[in-house]
Length: 88
Length: 101
Image (cartoon, rainbow over all chains, first blue to last red; front, top):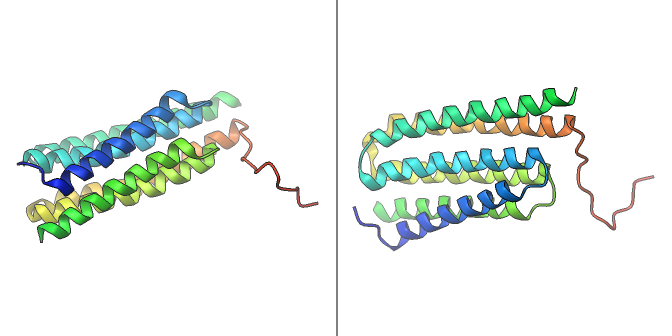
C-alpha cells in the first residue's frame, strides 16, 4: 500500500529516532551508555517491525516482532548482569 | 477513522524521535535511561494503537506485543541502571549547584 503524507512523516520520525540512538550507541563513553542505547534501539526496531507488517499488509511480521523483542530483552539483561558481575 | 489512525502514528513517531534526541543530549547514563525508556515505550504504544485502528483483525497479537513491551522495557532499564550504579558511575550534577551542607 502507498503511504500518505502523515504515514511518511511517521516513518521518517521513526528513522530519526533510530539514527539518534544509534549515534549514542557508537559514541557512548561508558559501557552502560551503549547498553542503554541498544535497549532503546531494540524497542524502536520492534515497533518498526509492526509498522512493516502494516505496510506490507502481512501479519507474519508480527511474529517476527515478538520473537525479536524477546531475544533483545534477554540480551539486554544478560549484558547488564555481565557488567554487574564484572565489578565484584 | 483512518485520519485518527494516522494521527496516532505521527504521535508515536514524534515520541520516538524525541526519545532518541534525549538519548543523544542527556548528560548522564541515568538521565539517558529515563529519556530512552519512558518516551520510547509511550511512542511504541501509540504506534501500535494506530496500527490496530488500521487492521482491527490483528488485535490479539498487537495486545500481546504491547503487553510484552510494557512488561520488559522497565525491567531491562532497571537492570541497566543497577549495573551502572554497581560499576561506580556517579550521578551527574550541575556545575553551579552547591552541596547541601
